Length: 234
Image 1 (cartoon, rainbow, N blue to C red):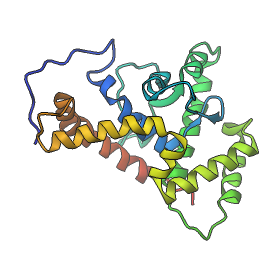
Image 2: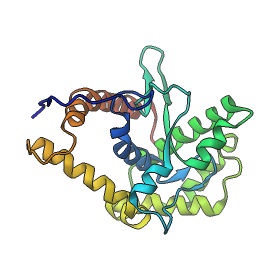
Image 3: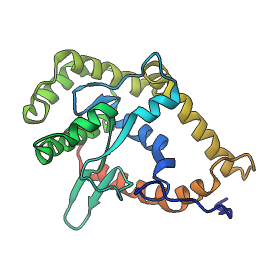
């Protein structure tokens, strides 16, 4: 299954090899955590009516929180020091440049990391239809005022609605809120299946070789560390 072709992949800008090809998959991973919440502006990332799926993907950036452009994993975990943090986060292009223009970049970045960690705790929690999640989510966000200052009640309610829908049917969540992006993700997923089947119709065989042999094992290890490091919110 894991066979490398003779095609020589070029480096994408200054980023790590295959960072460009990772974008769709990593945006999906990040949306699975944030459910589309813009952790900079505290509103939701939305698809525009006048943009297709390609323009949407181009508009959403993976911001390198620590300005380390060689970083290609979403998480960083130091097992010896028991230290965990986020390295990448999804942002619309406008928010992305606003962060870089911030006069207090380090403090803003720390707050956004803490927000992402909290969202990771929430989206890692199991769903129980008998619980009042509107009350639980409001309590969660209000108990962390230092990180969620300015978060409106309306956004908390909408995030709760999204969380419940995602837990009940994640595909329906994407069809309802990010249908254009989901089209692109399905294309990548289909191409991955073609690679697994050793089909000559696969568009990115080199990328998938690297993804399965190098990226995925390390990514899964980081996710397992993260889940064991943080307690679930509920």
